[in-house]
Image (tube, rainbow over all chains, first blue to last red; front, side, top):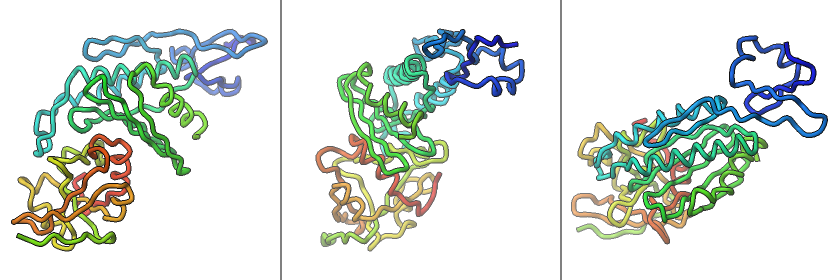
Length: 195
Length: 121
């Protein structure tokens, strides 16, 4: 039974006591639910609870259970590495494991930052072969769509363009994955406010 | 050799799509790319979608999308007739300041504009 001085966070969102009662007991003991004691001031904080890992290439990154679906993103993207030169009968290039690994590192870190700093679980992207050995990342939901292109050469810019269902358009570029704040804010805004 | 003609805004061009550009049942953005110095298309005045798909090495592995010339020009793409000896309909689409494959915005918008004539997805 939950104590009266305890708040409940599920996927980073507060849920009410009545909602909590409707959750089966087996789920409340599941690690996706994280319990913190509420204070009189301030909001409850999500606890560090990286009890899962996502593995690809040489990377093995701890993630909270709530972001477990990142594993599916990684698995679905592996088909890119199976494409051989001339996979389109028009001399399309194959894809480097190094670029693929950099893309996934970027995606995982973006989701971790959104979750841990902003308490937002972003929509999950799909990763597709891009032109000339580059890799495309797409976030697509009912209300918006964003295309990000990740270049082969690390010194080239990562570019993005997107639109929402209210005819707003947004575009930008950044050179380093560490300076992706504009894209991060757009994805958080889309998820939280549909802006 | 065929004369080079002006491509009217209201006409369509046909673009071939290999089946490997269909992923999760959708057209992939990377299909839009210049090979050589332009994206090769066929002008609807001298070609049908069937004609266009028949020019592929393996027609059964390809579909056809159409794009309206005016829509392409509104994206600031150059669209012009460039007939070859064996294909009077051959035309070209080219990025303005950079190749289409390097322009994320243009690729995004081309996918939205594309209409299936012979679906492969």
